[in-house]
Length: 248
Image (cartoon, rainbow, N blue to C red; front, side, top):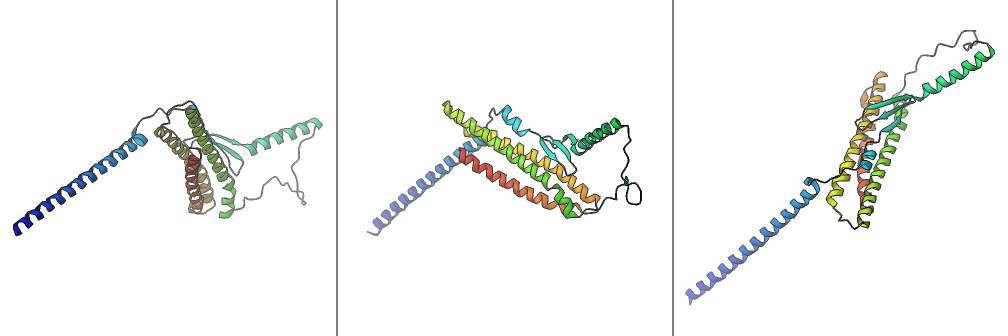
């Protein structure tokens, strides 16, 4: 009787062992399937090559920034952060005014005379340049940074609009939607756009830091601009994801 009990117990233990082994195999198989799908997804979105060339996207990403500096100088900054053109609008306006005055004076045959003060002395010599405070210097450059942010947001909106239009066209034409294609194309374009915006930001920052240094201040006073810019950059990234969800 005791021997039969031991035999039955052994059979039960063997069944439990086989059942556990079966579950282990099933779990391993499930893990391998998930790993395979994950690897395929990684391949689709990260490693598979797509033909993403698009002149319209390139035009948006490579559109140069036009930033007016505090002294009236207009900078044209390319995608690599190079100042490809620098125009001083104030000097141009002053030159036009001088030409107009010269014409008026030449018409009546008189020569222009410099202004004089109450003592009869000429006021041609300008007063010494006043040293600006850190606050004044930073306030001068705020419009330039705001202009950069506005143009960056405009370019990002144009990029999202282009993606939405392409998606709609493909659906309308009955084409297969390859999400890996859209991911590679437009995430890559957004990164390029962010890099070009960073480069333009650094151009403005260098001007701020140079002026701070010229006035005897530490360039670290400009760090708040960088902090605000990085915060705005995070907002643009979040905004891009939000708009992508709205369109797609």
